[in-house]
Image (tube, rainbow, N blue to C red; front, side, top):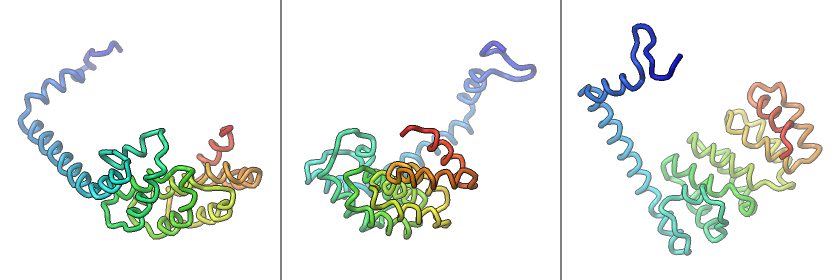
Length: 200
């Protein structure tokens, strides 16, 4: 079918958008949604401002903690500050996720046991996800057995999938054996198979 042509009895996407742009109810709904998104973003910006301020005092200039997650530049001076705020907690789930995700770097291995304890206590989905990523990224060979143990914590659901790559990376032959034993697992199976095929 040629793009832009009508299906029988239908309209093109362009025609639909043109129609909606004249629909007052639709425009009110869109405006309300945009206002709500902006309000949420402002709540998160205010919530993370103390973290951004502490980072600035240490010479780490960012407008959001997510700026660290999205950079390839190392930020060793930020790690203790991020860890302090992560341990303090009390932030919205999205901010907790950003703190943990920003700590998902190899140099944060010194805090691995803290990440594990926080992961086991975490209740927010974003916080759990971020901490699972931090556990995986910062793991070293000495954490192998603890990583495997975490796979058995069923209350953490599919966030545990992030641990599989680390188990392979730090576990060598034993890590591959663990992944091979999980290829039919309902939660881990698909990712275990993918990691076994990957050379990384």
